[in-house]
Length: 115
Image 1 (cartoon, rainbow, N blue to C red):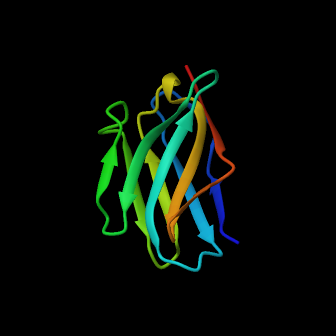
Image 2: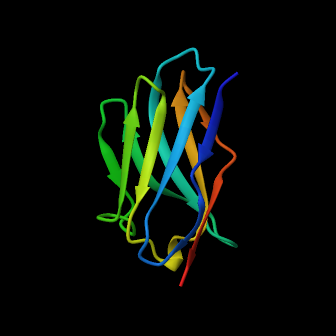
């Protein structure tokens, strides 16, 4: 059974930094895509950053230049480095993993940015 676990969320001040981690276990097939999404209170879940198996990364316009996604293929882990965070970055951050033709979600980690 595939498990996706996010960690690293918490409370951070405006302008500060935080690093989120997403770890995958139990997959029988290779991982194709590892994405980070976020959902703010009362809003939908939006794509924040995506990284392919070959390491190609893409970002939402709202986080370009501030967030960096990376992955460690051997550890089946992806990271989201969040710099210069703003109050509007406050949300639950979710990791989505694509493997074997299926998508798997983690339980989410809360990020709160204080002004």
